[in-house]
Length: 99
Image 1 (cartoon, rainbow, N blue to C red):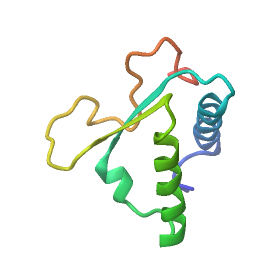
Image 2: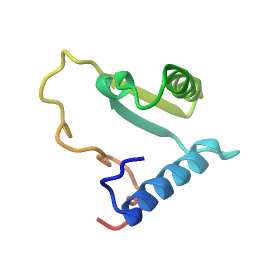
Image 3: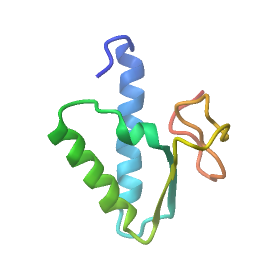
């Protein structure tokens, strides 16, 4: 957890992640596509065991027919959304909280 964030902000992020989890795991799932920068997959937040569990979960989810995970490698410059932590693009669903 990031101590600089107010509790209300942390709650919003947790709520978003929990909603995403429900969407991905439902019996009749809708297509889910995410774009992740390579840096996000390499930064360790926790020990090696925790990171290993997280990366294996991303890999496991990416193998589902309805989930697409795209990784932007370090050597790609100037991709869209580079200055934002979360970008919602091309979705009919609204963001999980008001801007």
